Image (tube, rainbow, N blue to C red; front, top):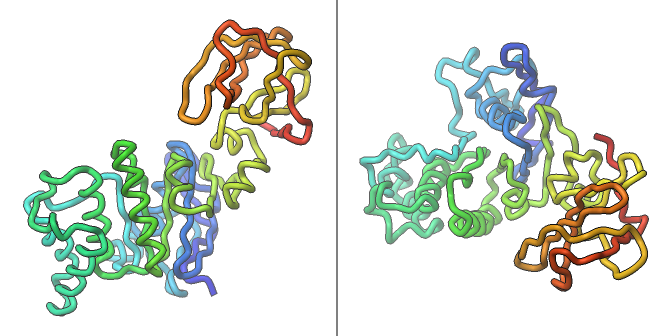
Amino acid sequence: MSSFIAKKIKKTYAGKIALSEFSLEMNRGDFISIVGESGSGKSTLLRIMAGLEVQDSGQVFLENEEILNPKKKLVPGYDEVKLIHQDYHLFPNSTVSENIRRPLLQYDKNYAKAREEKLLEQFGLKELQGRFPRQLSGGQQQKVAIAAALAIEPEVLLLDEPFSSLDTIQKHQLIDELGDLFKQWKTTVVFVTHDLDDALRLTDNLIILKKGKVVQKGNSFELCTHPQSQYVARLFSPINPIPGQKDAYLRPNEVKLRSKGGLLGHVVDLRFLVHYNLLQIKLKESNKIWEVDDPHRKYQVGDRVYVQWEEEKVMLLPS
């Protein structure tokens, strides 16, 4: 039996659909990432799951108990379901220890102290426990916010783009640390983001959301190799339209660069990336610009080049 369920959640704002019959079933300890562009309904979905937003229709259940929305519950929200935002929501005049301990004020003192110490240890915050939020980096503040949310051992943790305000180095470090911690716990986690790379660093279990609708779900290999739409395909990389073939596309890494044979083009731009050069090639036949990976860094701007590909690598993608 699934422990966390969303059934046909629908939400509209001023007649505009934010969510269209979204459904989800998760077992205890499952981790899923929901990926979508801004305005796709991700944050609204999490607020409904947390019992903080009123849906038009549909229900959310935790262990067969309905999560009631603010129209049905005097004090919105549940201790068993915690929502973490990109804004840290820390108490500025409380120390790290005090922020983590605050949710435990009504609990047994021995339990509260033991729980606080465990979280400080797990999150690597013991040396920072006496500092105030203003004395911490963004990544450290976010760790304190997540530790505080986990203080009372919620069954479900909802992450609403919690890394978007961090720089790349801080973000990757925090994601790697949290990924290790989440593997140790049995907390059910739903992570929403517009950044596919962030999602894949935490889990390979993905749902792609567009304008409130699930357009595809699966693991990264399935979604990358068999996307069902141009939208899903473009989440993984740019796609190049093949001249004369309707809805036929190639990824930059699937294009072969040759000195003869194939479609003629010229390199019009070059970007040095870590593992390859990214070329922009203008095709003579169609005047279209293709993005192509050059792993051997062989070509330069102005070079004449022919592009080829294997037919089995062609993706047929409706718009």
